[in-house]
Length: 189
Image (cartoon, rainbow, N blue to C red):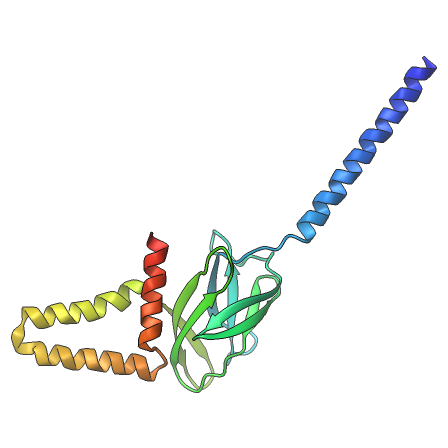
């Protein structure tokens, strides 16, 4: 009977040690897990209205609070390391006028990217997400209207030239348009 009690006490200690080891290792694994950004959004900074904030989003499009640390982004072709704290990072980008921003997250698994038009007023920045659909539909629609009504082909060319001038003068180059279209088509397939 004494041997059984001794064996039972040693078995309890062994199970307690295993349980303690598993709980510590799981906690350490969760602490050092490097989360990745699968989606993001750019919004006006709540503290400083002249700055923009990048929010790391989860699958429910809520801010992913687990994202902390430095992550590499490309903004209009320039690499920037953004410091995330609870899923938010301030984008230090001085804007003198309204312009387009092509923001892309650089990592090994996937490269989510978004195109924004940032409308600047005297005291605020308002980013609007530009969809790939509109980048394709507007010029194709103008071309189709021009072909359907040959009398207004000059008007269609005029509107297309104004459209491309507006995009180019606001920071949206043909390379960014093609990169956005390529990324959109890549995400479809």
